[in-house]
Length: 149
Image 1 (cartoon, rainbow, N blue to C red):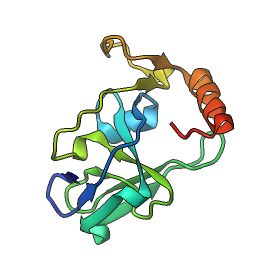
Image 2: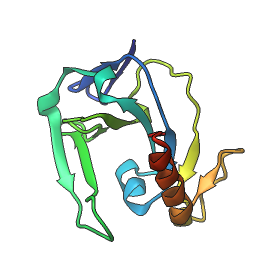
Image 3: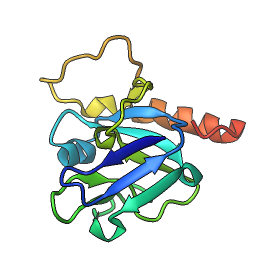
Image 4: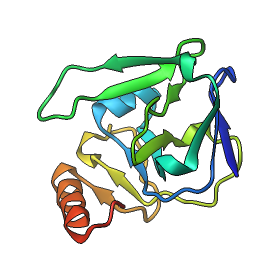
């Protein structure tokens, strides 16, 4: 069992397993949400995810559409402002990596939207770096192969 929570503890969850991917998104919106170099997100299947407390702690912000749907949604705790996963997962969801209370063995799979990196950001070892075009091609190939990672 893997547990996690927001900063104030109003939102708590557990999950059975992580399926991935584990990505660090450098897009401008994820950078703003995290307040740092990007937002590290870990993929899990909705069937493996359970909210233990605090579904009512969620507040949603829907950002204006930039290019193509879907819109960018930010879910956060109404008390402490911590970024949260979607309150109504269907199939698969991403969880901000900083929410995990338990140590996870997964390591970063890739950095995405690296064309939005800031000059002050350091490289992260040998983690693959994909720009918008590369991540789009990668995801299209995964859908065609029937693999969600």
